[in-house]
Length: 391
Image (cartoon, rainbow, N blue to C red; front, side):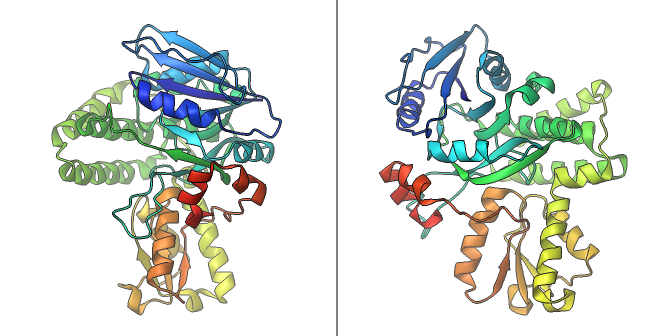
């Protein structure tokens, strides 16, 4: 059985649209339910007992806003073996894809990340954009499957995080408990990404604070200084671009204030390599070397569209003795420079269009699209047409 968990606060229009989409899904005979967690909305959330598909609905009302920890409340009352984490503005493109990902999960997988799409931006040519965030073994919270018993056993989401980077903390706990996090492209989610309740100062404040806490909790001692230096530099650049430097500064101050209270659960180098994506980058480069016939045949490699954890990708190339080219024109291979699944897949699409005939690689292997015809046929027609280029 599946339980959809959906926190919401003061966004009735977004919630209504999402409920309509959930009500159109076919779960191929798999039992499912929806738990809406009303995160202390000013006007109490009212929802039907069942959606048009027959999906039963339960609303849990909270008297205070618990932010991301509202998901823990939903998990406590859920009946499903698998929790499907959504936002009130995100919904699966295909119910059968959710079921296929859950049924096909390996025994060691505690969580499965979705391929998350954003609405098509008609101002950009050939734009089929995907959600940013996440890593090979880190989910994005608005589209993820999680085993309920494992989620509860590791304590769920850390309530102190408010929002942002809570998935990194959760996935670190899953890895430390001996589980894997997977990515399944049959599980496809549309994230409308409502602009309401989004304050860039607050977002940057939480991002820098929470990511610093994750690093201080889990990074091996030899990697900690570089990890903290990299993230504060990265978020400073973002804060400057978004005119959110005050929020950024508050986040840095709050992270420093938390230092005395942080309980270290230092990962091994091997586990940290999985958490940061280094293990997947090494595996992808090793396979590319074999396919090309050796390191010399693969390189030099130009890194294109650099993004999240590009330094990890560079490390993997240096370890294998692969020369890095200064530009695409002098390279044998073009390697997308981000380990975040959505931006990586977008960059793969763009690079293959821009450099036809070139060897173009992602930094890790997400697996093929391989959306079976019965899954594609089950998607709402307007969404299937909208994302035809992605399937």
